[in-house]
Length: 373
Image (cartoon, rainbow, N blue to C red; front, side):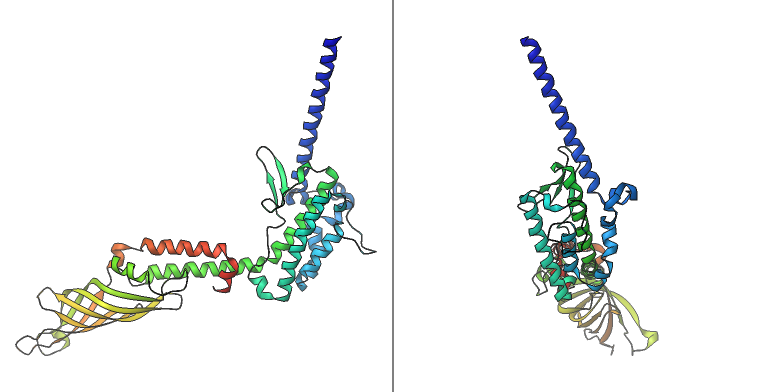
């Protein structure tokens, strides 16, 4: 008798465990389906029954005129009333299932998040710049399914005092909560579309300024890299001014030993050193201009000095005063310098790192990035 009693208890416990596991798996399956916009969108009218007018897609079409009118907070109010999170006015038909049946802790958390969302939407209604700057928590009502064990579907993950684990709720509560969250997530995604476009444009402009500076700018030696790293500049932007210090390059000196004429000119390779100078970048850093003091050391000896004019669209040109020679030779010469250092060194790691930081900062603080593109 004792053995049969033990066996009966074991069977009862096993059966209860299987029922619990089966119920948990069924609840998870319902949550994974009802919280998936694609799965909901594939339901037929017969499967939807009285819910056909309350799918996220149906509500999107329903509130399209209000979206175009910019009545964002009013849409959030209407969604809350339709799903029973707030009292419905007489004559308004709500969803077949209501959020009013949720546990108080869950319902209060939903109301708190909805209030925060409404405040952000209302700010965008009052100030279009606030909307453009992305001042809305787009992912506030994003549902997060966990596909690895332990599997679950949750809302407000990482947002204290959440999360709400939807997959452990009764089946009757899953659809209203999932569709409520999907509808509001779609609303915030649509609301933030202009902000995302503005952020993408600001990010592209910021990255382009760094690319232009590294690709089209005047090259820098290690000394110049160090010094220009301390030049005044806007935070996370390339330096608008560039100091030239003992910059060495190759060049060609054009001169004549006889009275100056086109057919008497000859060229001589020279080593060019620019002891000091200043350049300024224009616009989006695609071009620059400036002046440097230049020294030229020709192969034939002697030292020529002059002032070099720089412009990225024209090149690097200088008029030199050459040492006096006997025979009445012209003391003037034209110098054409070639900025070859860039091809040897490429873009400095320093500027590449600053570009990465600039892009990261733009993504981390979208409003500031958009406000100052």
